Length: 162
Image (cartoon, rainbow, N blue to C red; front, side, top):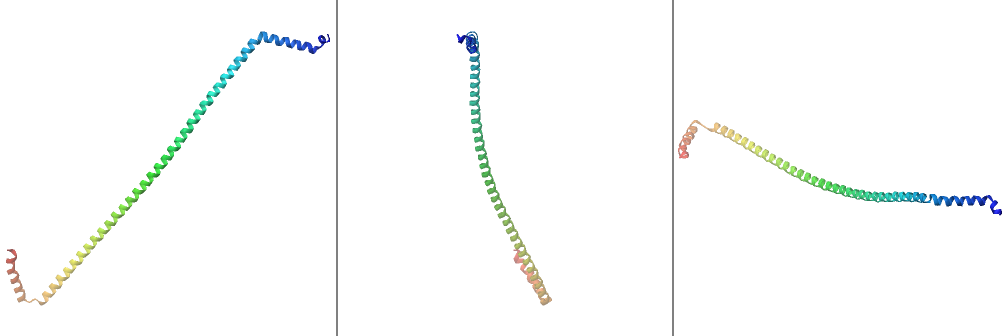
């Protein structure tokens, strides 16, 4: 009977009764609360899983878009390089053509200058020859020779016009 007088024993019995009452009276409520809490946690975990999957899809999509953008940028750069090369080749061809055209123009101007100089020299030679002939004829021509030369020229006119 010493057991009945021990306070630890009575505390244990009271605790057991308390647990028994809690389980019988509030057990269903506690279990329902725990079930509801568990369900809420499960829904939160599912939502977190769905958000994670969606985030992974979005990340994969952005990575694909980034790869596509890099590929497009490389294509644009390559196209720009080709276009620059084409423009450079065209400019070189245009420059060469322009130089050839200017060279031809210079050659034409030189030929014209040569022709003009040749004509000028010829004209001066004719002028010198006429002046020399006039001086020679004037110095050696007498009135009788001049009259005979004039008559001869008039006589040959008839033959030249028929």
